[in-house]
Amino acid sequence: MSIAENVAVIKQKISQAAIAAGRNPEEILLCAATKMNSTENVRLAIQAGVDCCGENRVQELTQKLSENAYTGVPIHFIGHLQTNKVRQVVGKVGLIQSVDSLRLLEAIQLEAAKQNITQNILLEVNIGNEESKSGFSPQEIDTICQKMTHYPNLRLKGLMAIPPISHFSGENRKFFQEMLQLSVDITAKKYDNVCVDILSMGMSDDYLDAIACGSTMIRVGTAIFGPRNYR
Ligand SMILES: *Cc1c(COP(=O)(O)O)cnc(C)c1O
Image 1 (cartoon, rainbow, N blue to C red):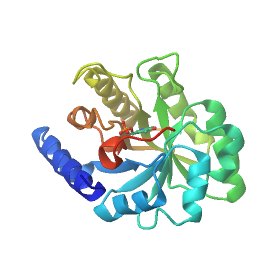
Image 2: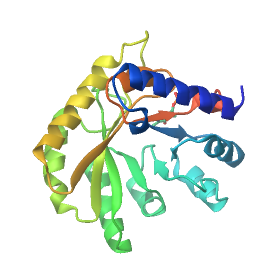
Image 3: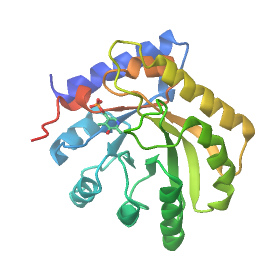
Image 4: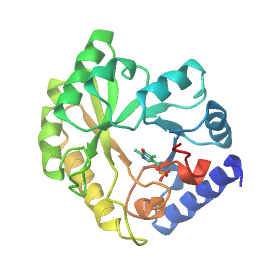
């Protein structure tokens, strides 16, 4: 199947899953996870109607930006970002989804202040409390939200999660439900500088479960582009 056909199928499935959950399909955005894919493939996905692109690595982002790969859609950063590389990302992407430590948050604030811009961010939650993953623990999220008032050049737009690798369909629903509850909790507190409208969760294997549990943004790579070649 072509990239265009894959995107069409995914959009159809998004609609069906949304309607089945009593949700408006338009509140769910499709973010193409473009890592390891060429500029040409990225353009095909954009033509096919993805809502935004998410890039994982700073070097790939810089390269594709120089080739105007993302023309037409917002670009997000979704990978682990080292503090010494924030300058190459802040102001260059509409949203940094993967803010996974207070140290990184502070580095982004410093750089955004230097550029005199407001940088939209999501907090990455290590929802499975996995040793191998970065991100805030669910228990830390409220404290970080309280602190957002001290970061005038950041706007917190919501939460993102990559749950543990699942072994059967539906296994991650409990994590998706916990994420929804977290986002409902912080929304209710009406913190300064926090405007939670994005809940970024769900990938190729589990995006239908994520939509059933309230996701507003799914990040899909393999189901759009096919398997990645890690060679
Ligand atoms: C690669 C990646 C995805 C997409 O993964 P697929 O399983 O290929 O859909 C989503 N989110 C992040 C952060 C990724 O790195």
